[in-house]
Length: 118
Length: 499
Image (spheres, each protein chain N blue to C red):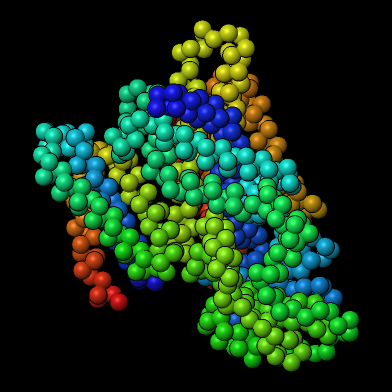
């Protein structure tokens, strides 16, 4: 039971923070945050982080469940993370960004705790 | 590109509008049907008065003892063993062709209880499949699936700022833009789900729309096609009375060696009254997308293995993966909850599309000709009844289950009658009331019914609820709480959203 719960939490946090990073790479969401558009290297770093987060989430799902089941779960969590970010951002951009930072840290912690669990 | 976009806009707007009144109902009932078995479990609180044993062997034995005694001549016995998902031991058999009866077995005492007569979650699943209207319904549902695909693709083509607006939802300010944002977010961020669910839904009934191959190769007999894919290893009837059954335990153990320890969820006893009776064990499908259940079949009189099927023709597995993707019998609660949420997202997409159509055109109503004005007026009201009215009717269906006397004759049909009567009443209400008031009243009505349901459950089936908790069966309470949360969500929508 621990493993699916671990995987679910990790993948969801990765999907949410991945969506946040990709959104914050866009001028529309970057400017309200830092008062200026993202410089190209910053934008690329954010995009890279976002894609890495989504990819890592897929890896977690495929490792934790049979590959076919894991892929379906990943699609669901991908939608959940992206919609979660979009809704929270609409309510409070600041809160959404703070949650994104916390999710990214949480995901790193959970990933590093994985060997202990298995 | 511009001409294409204009053409696609018309298709999306008008095709979407005309199909959405029905599509919303198909999506919503399909969403509920993800938890079909849980809904059925909740709708038969009597099940809580019969407990299964801890060991599946004892459960199988208790079920067989009951069936042998009570229905020795049934053509087939079906035994659903208790699982983590549904912790009840349920047996069923066809009393007459196509008319199944079921009982819940208490494995400790060997007694059987009859749950109240109800369609349970099947009501939602059947409506989702065929609108309770047989073949005509299957075709109508297919039309909604086809239009959902067309609307999804045309929606992407006409969404000029699909990447720019990818993560954008602006609930404050301009009402039309908020609705468009909501429609876009629920459409785009769930696009993989929408495309998958519409396509695989159509795939489930391919043989209905294109029966030519079936007619040519199998004389139109779907069972003959099935027999090529599924080796049942059943014996032809011997037309001689059955001798005593061999003990079930060695068969069960043998089947577990073939199918996996703790994997057996379903047993069928084929022609139990015949000398060629066989006992068939099926594996669960929790860990694979392809909806194929490995199985093993044994002679009932001596326990000899007749045959087992644990590997599948690649084409069959591929096709059954499409069906599995649609029905989601795999992945346990994680997948069911994700499908529920994604399904709700689909409902939001369709409902927001319906509202957007009217919000966008309201400023133009005054200038529209009398025919168009009448059409808009009807569209506004159909929106209310097809969305809020359906939710209200679904809640009323659950109330009918608890408030109609448990022993009443024909109550299963009456429950469905209450569902449709309530739905019709919401349409009349929507026609009689100003549109914003109709939305508000029906949403508040549905919210109230949902919020009060746990209370009604506690009053009408409190003993069952207590027993379920004592036995660690979390389905009934979980169901009450989920419906309560839906009630909170509906009340919030009724209060905050400008419709």
